[in-house]
Image (cartoon, rainbow, N blue to C red; front, side, top):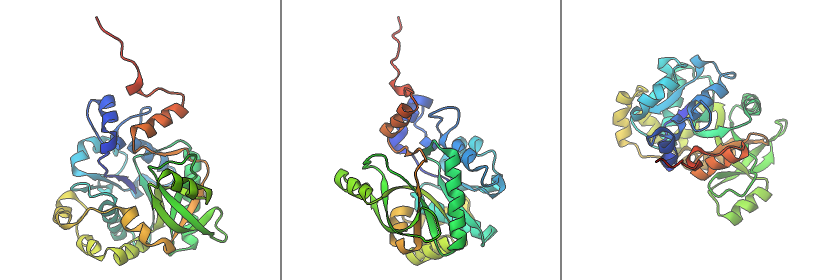
Length: 294
């Protein structure tokens, strides 16, 4: 499942410089000839065939999205009326997957992150799927090893090691955007950045969401997964964040897989994007001096 429903407002100055319009970052070709959405779909293609890949987008972004999701069947592009943060979009997608294959295991991928080590990333996803297959009531999260005390990211505090599951740990707690001193303390305890990449059984996701947000599941359970069908439910539904308003409430059902080698970055700010350019020895296009004209 590819999540492409964000508005990307914090990066609009960057996307305006590159494209001439303040488009959401997941549709912008910031580095190279692939947008973040296109790179996500390419990255997961060796793991999941297009006919088993869903993407959820916003109705207002369809003109941008359609060419970039052309590798997917039309029926696999779910359209929500508007962005209500990550919760409703993920729930709509989970319910649609349950209608198609209630026994499926799903991997959930944000499309607004940059990942340099794609082969290593896929290896971690395969290991997470095996973990879920052996612990069917568990949801696995991918945790990236921090290389600095970043205060703009969410952190996962690992608990006891999961026996027989490699570098996987129970989740002790979440810490969202901690101050510098707390981020440093979390890292010393082995804390990981929350990549928001998840693997779990579809039925288990829905079961747990129903425990925490029963009204939202009831609103969407029998609604067609398209903008017109979803519009009445979205008019009544509050905006909610899947990590803050759901995952943080169910740590005992979660495990985190530690990834040492992802080259992962949440491109939430221009500074984060510039840091990636710097590691590649490149100068961001918005930092290139403009030549004077006569």
